[in-house]
Image (cartoon, rainbow, N blue to C red; front, side, top):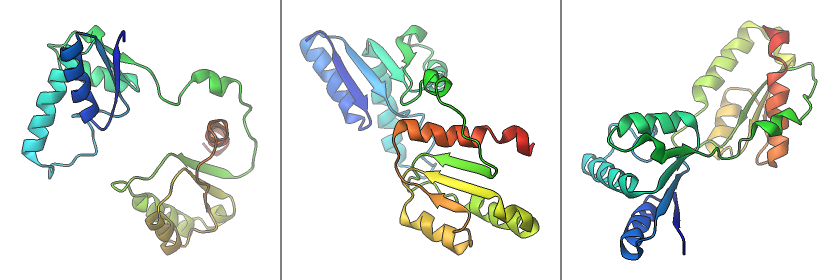
Length: 200
């Protein structure tokens, strides 16, 4: 074995990598699919002792790692700022699921509707309720837009999201697509992006 590679979460995999590194003397690399301590989804109600322990172990694991990989440059910069005592060149970025070349080879889709697309998963701590309320009020004030507004939810939409769509009377304007192949998801993004200049 030349190196130990751990991906998280679960963050316990980082602790395993740290201890395996101690036992074997091999370097280890940590790959974060989301931030650990800097995760924005954890509210102030989270257990303070748990937060302190996680911050302690995160710094230990990062300090001894050969490399700490994040999914975007913003998270990488945030961690460099958060841990000034850790060399900045230890942090790196490898994007997950994004490659600019994927967009350059795809053709834009032309359609006459004003399209909004959400490409991703709704987790339990996320809700499109404010957005749906805003769309409902927009359509009430601009009845002509109702025929030309198309909203796509591409990815997992739990039952509570479907219920919110129904409660707001938006079933005719919102398409819940579900999971699609990567290239098809890019088409939805481009379908949305190309309409910007028309509706400015």
